[in-house]
Image 1 (tube, helix red, strand yellow):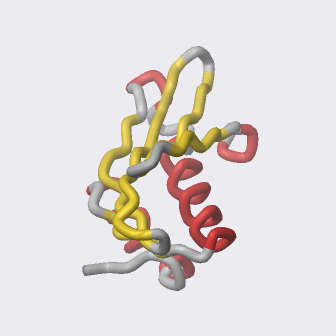
Image 2 (cartoon, helix red, strand yellow):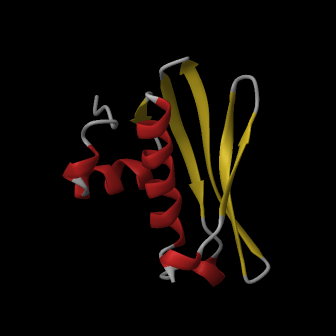
Length: 98
């Protein structure tokens, strides 16, 4: 399912969020911008109806790909993003562990 999830990025001055709408349910991963080259992912929310379908994983991967393309780093403050980043050593180029 992960390959068919469309994700939008909504930016604000201080941060933003990644949003996936799947089967009339919204999942999101929010972040704040610590500096032009650093974001802090602080929250991931996936409704129960979407759990186990790879939606959270797709949000995390989208954030990593955006960081690579945009030249910034990610601090995974959110427990979900932190767990994902520890499972994916290949994200170490953009994910900053504390």
